[in-house]
Image (cartoon, rainbow, N blue to C red; front, side, top):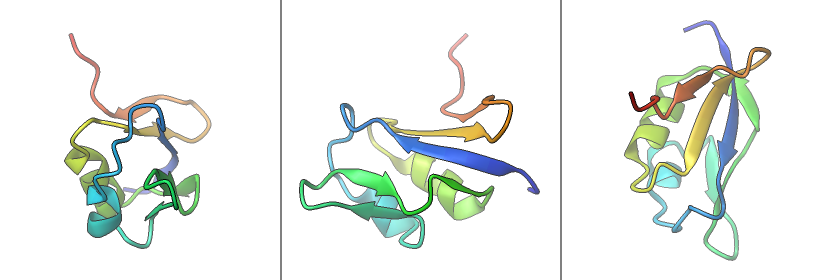
Length: 78
């Protein structure tokens, strides 16, 4: 992919399902409140990170291109 992503989790939306941590354990952790957070807020674009974002049941994970801030996921509704 070659890009770098800013990874954020909207903790007001996160329900703590753990899908992200199960899908990409090197990239996401659940804290003691069962809220997800990225291991590294900036990371190389990678399939496991995208799969975790796509698998989030409430779309709490946002991936944006580092620098431009262009949102990679979730897709914009048109």
